[in-house]
Image (cartoon, rainbow, N blue to C red):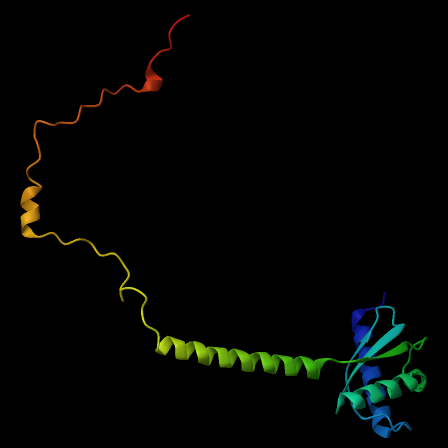
Length: 174
C-alpha cells in the first residue's frame, strides 16, 4: 500500500496531464466540450479513474464517451511519459453525474418552494375545526356552589389506620 498523500499527488498530476492533452485536442470529431472534474488513483497506483463532464446534449455526451474510450491508450502513453512512476496506471474514463445531480437538486428545491407556498396559502385561509382555544380551563364556581360544599356530614369519619399491614400478619402455624 502506498502513502495516500502520494496517491493524491499522482491523481492531481494525472488530472493536469489529461486536461492539457484535451486542451491541445485529439483528432476525433466526436469529442465535445469535455471537462475533467476529478481523478481517483487506487492505493497501489495501478489504476486511475478519470471523471469528466460534457457540456451539451445527451447525444454529445455519448459521442464524447466513445471518443474518450477510443483515445484511452493515447492518454495512458501521455501519462506514462509525464509521471515519475515505475508503472503507468491503467486509465478509465467515467462520466461524472454532477450536472444531473445538480439539476435534480434544483428541481427538488423548486418543488419544495412551491409546496411551502401552498401550505402558506392554506394556513392563511384556515379555520379552526373546534374552539379557537382547545385547552381545558379550570372551572369557575359561582358563590352559591361554595356554600353547598360546607354541608358535609360530620358524622361520617374515615376509619383510622391500624398500622398493621397484611404482610405483617403471621401465617398460620402448621
